[in-house]
Image (cartoon, rainbow, N blue to C red; front, top):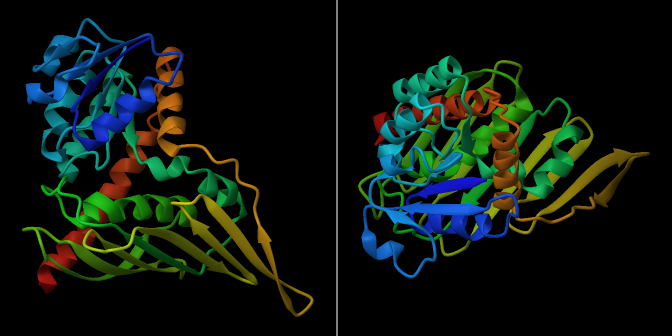
Length: 299
């Protein structure tokens, strides 16, 4: 299989590192408008992504979010399978357009919400029943990248995607506050979501923290589940016979990005194009943009 990677910044370089390890990928092509990023690689390189059209079986788009729509549109129109890094696009209108195009062309539109592939999350996903309260903390140091988008679209969207996955419910109320500290857009944000069935989620995301924390907690009747994404640790606490019993779940650790890329490669190889990946990404983006709008009103 031949894969093209468009954008060789931090995220694109991670994709390249993992793609090198996947046996099913026989040839790689690299694209970046900054030619200095393409030096010293033993692969064909280009500054124009359009030159990949007849050379590859699928593309990975790891460019700034503002460029996702035109690049993804170009390949989808050519019926080329696409993996786009999150967020799918900066606007809901563009996201809807890409989802519609993928459906019309019956072409795979895969979106890089990598936490779906975290082994710890996979281990607890089916154990979550009727969540009542969810608490998320996602803190990172200043990234010096993705500054064209807010922390809501950069980091919080990971947790929004997971929360929508486990609640399977509509948001009734959004309360949010955020501050732009080091960049022109929001760098730290806290959100409280109330769902129609009564679940409440409290989410904090920051890209100006000294610590790197990615933790997720879910509370339901007689059960509390704790998830550490960074260390791929999952714990479950349950009330039994008037005592609290703790169980550390067995987690077969694996790099989430590797799981994600292996699934993408498998889908491309089998010529499958499920729309669910793009639809879920669009839903997470829609919620993230609503949150961002509430924050901007409060600044």
